[in-house]
Amino acid sequence: MGRGKIEIKRIENSTNRQVTFSKRRNGILKKAREISVLCDAEVGVVVFSSAGKLYDFCSPKTSHLKGEDLNSLQPKELIMIEEALDNGLTNLNEKLMEHWELHVRNNKMLEDENKLLAFKLHQQDIALSGSMRDLELGYHPDRDFAAQMPITFRVQPSHPNLQENN
Image (cartoon, rainbow, N blue to C red; front, side):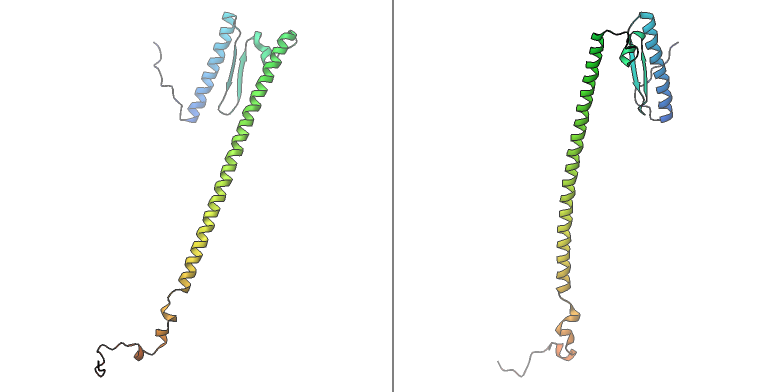
């Protein structure tokens, strides 16, 4: 009787995810050892956890790839390993440079956007201070001349002047 199939997707619970990683990592390393011994195959497995921890296995014939047992290698093999390391280092430096250039570009874009927003804010401040000045200089009934006149002079006659001749 076999197990049921599970859906292959990310495990949301971090504890369950860590337990599953540990079990499956041990299983894959065990399978690598078995295939190396049973089939006399050259096997190398490298696994990185989500925290960046390295887990690896190499069969005895490939241990020189990890930097172990280099004395038994011929100069040709050492040159090949050195070239592979140089290529890896070159690729790593290129990737690092790409990330740096991307960072510089993004930083420049953010600085430009910040300058633009600061300029717009300054323009709005100027517009608002101008509007406030207009409000301060605008009509104020308490400062108006009519408010200083006695009430008798401010009344408009409701009847036309009957003594005027047209």
